[in-house]
Image (cartoon, rainbow, N blue to C red; front, top):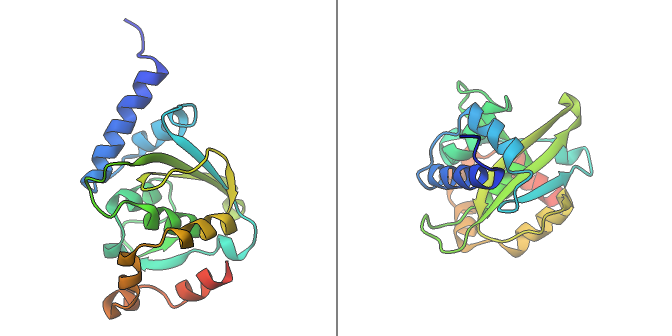
Length: 183
């Protein structure tokens, strides 16, 4: 017997990633490798490119590790964007957009598998983050400014309630509020 078709392999991978995201599991480096290569070609997943349109957009902000989903943090660690030993995680604006686009309830009815891809010039690397998000996006390249405009249209009451929480406010760096206002 030969290899399963691309369609079948991508379907299995998406099912595995949905399960990992649902239980906030760790994504391993081999899964990231498969995700990069299989999901770019799959019609079951939206590939969203992000064009960095300014230097400010390249600047990540620090966030407490305990506040971020392990599903996302493990993807950042597998691509060497952060390490396991630090208490804070540098979160690029694109990843912040993905985190805010995650569904609020685990059993949400409509989830859209989306692979985000962006090029980071200082390291000369392309990075990927996958998530099942709560709204559909067209399969195209966005600027970071467009994504932030999309985000402000989709802000939920939970996120607005978290901004007033002093415990969360202490963990997030002060540059977070300034950074979003620049976009």
